Image 1: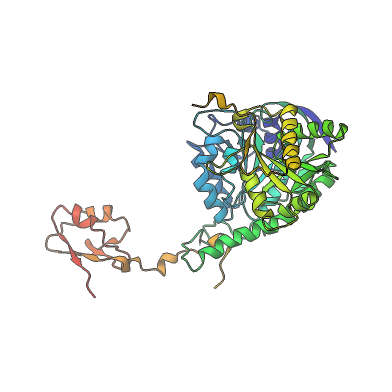
Image 2: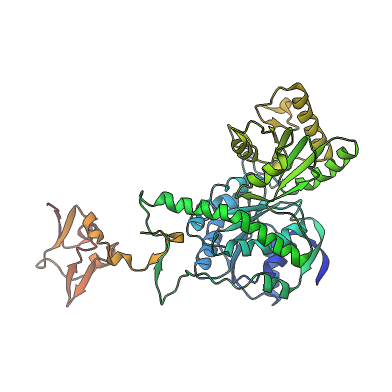
Length: 396
Length: 85
């Protein structure tokens, strides 16, 4: 059973969070924050949600509050974006190390300077090494479902890591879409109360994150990596379990879209994937063998699942909405590193797309596919990333 | 020894670790000059100054020898003496 409503993307997140019944929510409601925490504040004011809502003085504190709350066995949540996420960085690394399973919505927006409030993935990509699990979503429906799964993933006793659900600013947060919502009882039985073995307790004092010397620190870090590796399988199970209840299957760690027999496979994350699907449909109808791999879970990096889909293709075009200055896009870097040394590996092209909200439309995707075909036909690999729609004429 | 998730260990580990061993100089209170004003107790960052029967004593298990007490003492009753082994 479920009901359907047209809601703002931010409200879809707030309704998912509400259904998960967190005990503590922190919020720093100033730019680059979104409506998410406003919708939650309204639910509390209207008596629909009983939770400790803490208004803090910075995003550093927002992360610190839910970190501490999580350590007291409270299900905890916050949302942020862009500069706010960067200000949380230190706390997020620490929280992963302390194995605190809260959930954060990372609304994707460009990083200053120059200042911008438009979408790209630079902010959350900058946190990829922190030990926080990262999901990227394409639609408001996927953002709703993924938040409900996120708490269950985070709180799994063998995972116990923060989970960040990354959603594109404006395109998802501020647009209205049709969303199908779960009934409260369904969420309740899918997501039991958070009951960790270890928690802060005045009657049984414990030290968290005690000092670690060179004889053990590597093992602590490896344990986080091991949890990430374990999470790959567990996330797929949790997504399937949710799909059984909702009847909506968004895929596992990745979604492969029309990749059968594809010669060119594009790879994308976030709302861009929806546009790619449209373009792929058109190109397929013209007889072009093109497909899409949408990465739903970026950390842990789902190479095994990607490999299963791309191993017979000739070329993979990665659409990176981020850039590592002085190097290349993050997703392409990950993929190339994993493919290196496999003689049968497809070529990988890195397309830097959509920085600062630059439009990625079907025309952009056709250009990318054309570029990939050129490389394929010429046999000359493209070693440097290709900045799509870059206007060199205005460079200083 | 096995490590624990999140480096969680039993509380009160400072009872096992005597951080006074970090000290390279020790504060010594000259009782004849001490007026028991309590400045040293207030400024000690390690809570290593105690009052027992109006007499100020230093807990050398936890005093790291920073010298704040000697610096703040209005009657110069605290002397910093180098630790020697």
